[in-house]
Amino acid sequence: MIPGPTPVPENVLSCMSKHPIGHRSGDFQEIVQKTTEQLKWLHQTKADVLTITGSGTAAMEAGIINTLSKGDQVICGDNGKFGERWVKVAKAYGLDVKVIKADWGQQLDPDEFKRILEKDTDKQIKAVILTHSETSTGVINDLQAINNEVKNHGKAITIADCVTSLGACNIPMDDWGIDVIASGSQKGYMIPPGLSFVAMSKRAWDANSKSDLPKFYLDLNQYLKTVNKNSNPFTPAINLYFALEESLTMMQNEGLNNIFSRHARHQKATQEGIKAMGLNLFAKEEFGSPAITAVHPENIDAESIRKSIKNNFDILLAGGQDHLKGKIFRIGHLGFVNDRDIISVISALESTLDKMGQLKAPSGKGISKAISILNNA
Image (cartoon, rainbow, N blue to C red; front, side):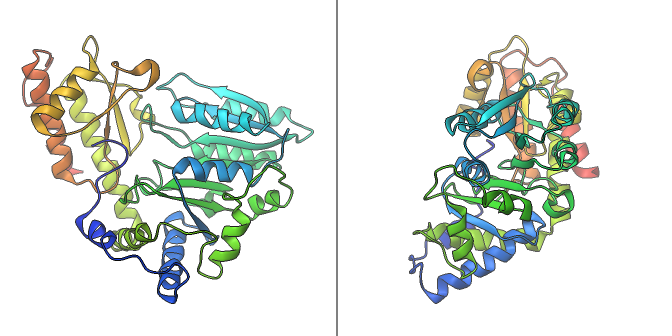
């Protein structure tokens, strides 16, 4: 129950056990063709979605270096560990970075983006880079509102880290007009780590034609050229493609709206169950992520809770990062997660707090609340 790698369905794991096939073979080209169309369905876009053998960080770095040039002015949103990372990547490539910060656990303010973008009358800002669902804090940023301010600017593009949000909540790329979306396989895709995905709008490809940042393995022009031939410029993770085809087929059978509703339902059951047992949420409810809930237990070491739940119930939760280590723990509820998993983790948490003498509400109140929501939502 961590926010990645997430649980993998047995039928997806079985697909990975097949013997690899040649990545230049007709059989593999059929898989590339099918998964490319499935990825476009998931991203809700007509644009090609490019698959890279690498992590979500590779996809984000590819989005940055394929659309920008050295010295370009960019805005980076920073309200967590991954927002910090994109600031570091942008600076590593010599970009002129303006950082919009929010405290960890707080949402980025779209009005701050609006103020800076409106002041840029010379149109020097080339991109806005941000994380949609901040995995380190359980906060989901208002990507649609921020992207609207970028579109009003008229020149800048949006580069969005949707690693934890894609496949968990609605991100209609074409309808919202998002320019670059990056994601990774080990989250909502329900397969192991190793593949990442980049979708680029026409505006992003126009920016690509002017980009002068160094790139070779992450040169998206090579991926675009080969995906149109149902191939890949380098040796891909073939068995992960087998898994990808199976997992995306499962997602299509469930349907996008059902996927989004399931995640919203599990988010609500988790959050309300936690509150009912007397614990605090780290992120305010109105901007909690459908993929992950961060819990802030006052006056209790979060690591001791994690350790007890792992030892007694064989359930792994994620800890806090950096200055939040020991202060929060995080429950992942994205991808291949069902009602039983939510009931199990809330029950385990409530039992653990009771055993530690730290349960602030009557025993059973948390799980009762979670079950009520699961049965009636």
